[in-house]
Length: 136
Image 1 (cartoon, rainbow, N blue to C red):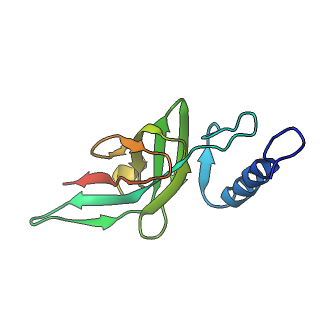
Image 2 (image 1 turned 120 degrees about the vertical axis):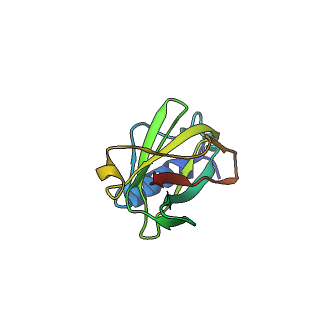
């Protein structure tokens, strides 16, 4: 459905709904992750994963950590708090992103934890990328 000017009015409503939904979810965008121009639909994909501690005494294992994930790319940076299982999920524009994490349980949050590689988010796709804090 379009208005008399050929625009999709529901895009603005969806944007407002997402803004309201994210306002209490722990997601903070330092700039808009996706935009619409001329009423066109925004392309997006999903990035998800976990914040884990890995290592420790042999044989080593991994466990979920509290904290936050920072995603940077395409001139934008977001931060999202992980859930009680260390998980995170966010919708964003397709592109290549650097993903890091911080946990108060890992060097008091002062040292970033890293993902093994950048995330490549595709339109309409879900990309899974875990972030690891290396324990000794």
